[in-house]
Length: 420
Image (cartoon, rainbow, N blue to C red):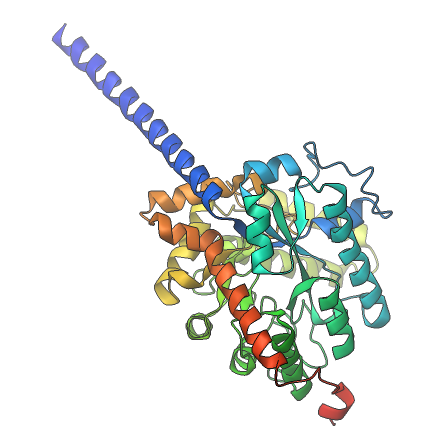
């Protein structure tokens, strides 16, 4: 009998510990949701406009109803509300395969989608052009909707086009996407310039003059350093993580994190599995090698290549990135750059795989709860959620106001500055 009582007591203790753990996690989520109501969570990058374009070439918002759950997407209004999103940079991405006039036209069409979103669902979205607009929209219960261009190919090497994009609402431009520009090197292309050309530097100066944020996600480390050197305003990384934790070119080296701290900018941690987990990054590299081998063996038969890849995947299960690993990137950035230089940029609807625990826009409170669990103070979390980004926006606006008193719009051309 005493032995049975002991076993029963142990079971009660185990169940009590489990219950306590569940209660503690529930308390953390409750605290997290409360923090999301205090300041706008400003996400640096969401590709919903391109996802809409892909699934509906007509881009008809009348048939793309996101007031109800849309399982095929990572973004809809119910999940944005559940995630406590208070400000969103909507990416008006166009791929690097589009160049010249085609890229300019496609970017204008993407900007049009964001404008029409805010008009179709005005109770949820409000077009935001300034930090004050985001704060006002948040207080009114709406999501401040900002526009971010993803890739300088969208301006076709034209400062006049850059200015017109700003006039239409674009408030950041990612200097490159996956391929080099004539005036800037990308992180995932073979370096040509060693950073920015003279015209590239003039692009940065003109962005400063207007008040457009300089976004350094996707650019090479040399381009990062050049842009930070030239920029009179704080820079951002709209969706990048820490290279020391996951060694891929799209992430930010510690040396650059230190530069960002001195510049006053912010790096917005992204939820791309291959940028969060080294195991996933290594797996992706092996998969790429396997694809290249199969294509060399079957150069004119993509069907054979796909069959071979599926067989390889079956024999080599893909590892998963986790929410805890995403928090590790935040920990590292806090150590290297400081708490004032961290934000969030999920890249939802621009990714084909997800971090476990961060599957869509509804999951932000789970990450906030993880940070609380790790001992982050409420004030620090408010900075990560949105206050750091608002500070950067306000600083960029102040710099622009000063430059506009002394500098006229630049009439420089790439042909003038980048003489071969």
